[in-house]
Image 1 (cartoon, rainbow, N blue to C red):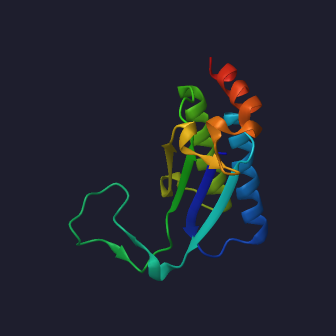
Image 2: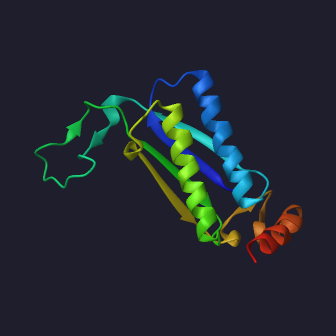
Length: 147
C-alpha cells in the first residue's frame, strides 16, 4: 500500500530505472510489511526546472531556472507509526538508491519526504483499507511489528 514517487531529471537508462525501482521496493517491503507497494518514476525535462542554491537563501539573484537538471525528490506516501530507527533506515536507503541510480556523488541533491496518512485514508478494491478484508492479515502483522 505504500507509494514511492521519485521525481528527477530525464535520461535514466532502463537498467538504472530498474535498479531504482527494485531498491525502493526492497526497502519499502522491509520497512512496512504491507502488500501492494508501488514505485513511480517521474522524469522532468530541464525546461521545467528551477532551483535555489542548496545551502543558501536567495531573493532571486542566483536562481537556476531552466538551466540545471532536476534535483531528485523522493516522496513516500504511507501509514504512520514507523519507529524512528526504521524511518532513518528508510530515508537513508532511499537517498542512497536514488543517488546511485542518478549517478550523484553529492547526496544533498536528493530530498526525501515521508507523507504519512492514516490507514483509513487509503482505499483499494472499493474498501477503506481498515475495512478491506484483503488487508486484515497484513494490518494485524503491521500492528505486531510496531509494538
